[in-house]
Length: 188
Image 1 (spheres, helix red, strand yellow):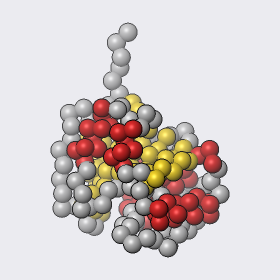
Image 2 (cartoon, helix red, strand yellow):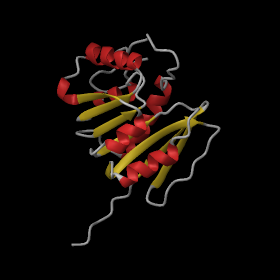
Image 3 (cartoon, one colour):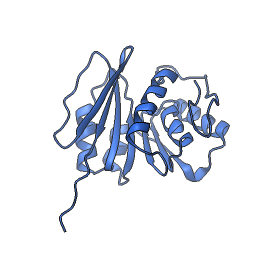
Image 4 (cartoon, helix red, strand yellow):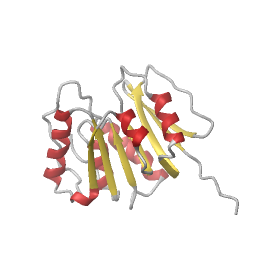
């Protein structure tokens, strides 16, 4: 695994993966970020990497100019890998936070707002509906923010009317949903 583009381009990430981790492949990350680059500018973006695993998605976003990345992971072994990757890239402490937490609990307690939310839950759990409900209820996604939700290509989900499905991208056995909250102009 490596960083695809940006200031850390071609830098390798830890290959010492904990059991049960299914990292997003380099090819999939490149495709995800190519799509995102056409939808947004990463400069100063606030990124949430849920079920962070190795942290590769959040680290790729930081490499491309994101202001900050919050990594949420409940496995201490995965957190150690994320820390090792952050250290190897010499990322400044003001650019990231790591939370040892269950993803749903983090979202329920969160009072932050993000420009990009990556969610890559284990394929064995059904998390999408709860995830969307919490994001909507707690207003965790900034205006025009984007969610990238990864799941098995065998599954399908319905998108809430408050969200806009931008794209579905299938790569091998994986499906990526790109979802946006349309900007709603406030009436003065």
